[in-house]
Picture 1 (cartoon, rainbow, N blue to C red):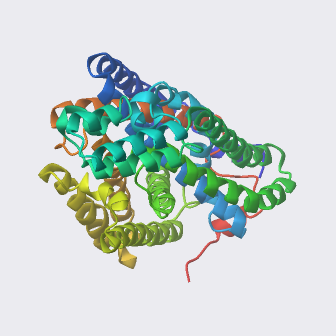
Picture 2 (cartoon, one colour):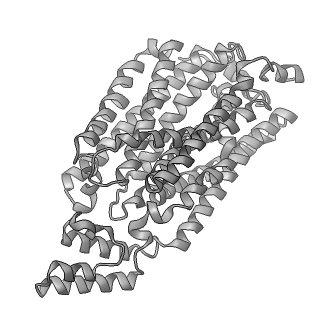
Length: 449
């Protein structure tokens, strides 16, 4: 397409979208002030609250990468006109390490169970001493003396049983080759390097194709897609292990990486639907994104919602059936108090059952109002799910600390506000549709069968 067509899909100065970045910048600024205040008032809670905000942004970014990758992997033509919405989010990869900095500065608080744990040999020695003391009939004080310094299980006479503490000590000691400071930071750098490469290539090639019309960029994107998909899957999974699962290092689940992927994917479809609907409402695009596209986006969102429910239930069911203490502890944290039980049940009812019926029908997927409502609902529930993932570790086996929820709200405002500001600023510099893609005509003439 020519320069005139490119300008047609640029955001004009008078549009509400031209000032969207200013609104998100204000949101982020207020969030940063709230987060800073919380960091001074309750530094421990701030660490968990900020991690919650960061994981919320990260899953949104990961889901957007998945959407773009799968289009190139399959050589899809129908999605060319909607793909740019996801590409704008993908392009913000460079801000992720900046947003992660407060997490990196609070690792000893977030991951205290293993971060401050002795080395493998020392941990085993402590465990053997503890076992010998127990067999010899040693009292509680002797057991506490044998426990590693700073180990939280013995504080205040509360927490798991001595047998469980011994098992946890040996478990963490056995994982020390992976869970150690140097390797943790090395993996962190590797994740961000992979994600920066994905973001710069997936968006950069597409934007360059708009400028030059060179069809070879499509070939390059399709050629890199298989390798990029493997890199994406591995980095997503291990980052989830490092930053979320290791909050409770004794717990493990081989399905957790898939659950992160499922939550990220369904979120990305919801975001694409809402952003493109916003463009249409503002008159920035016309029939280039139409009912047929929303029908397919709705089917994908609905399908991955089912997939998310299947994975979440399968993980729960297998852990419940096996009843292995190292696995069930994850759900005990989220069921021991009525407040956490309420959140657990709400995810089943509000993230799955309600949107399941809301967007299941063909008519709903072809109605912009209903599909937008369903997408917005899923995004709201995504915030609840990320809270469910992270915040139980703030004060394990205690009720939800409702009085401090303002800090979680502030941290989400800070991370999401900064991230969206970067995304919306990028929107001002590029067409809202990938006008240089040679398959664009297929997207414009797309019809559902």
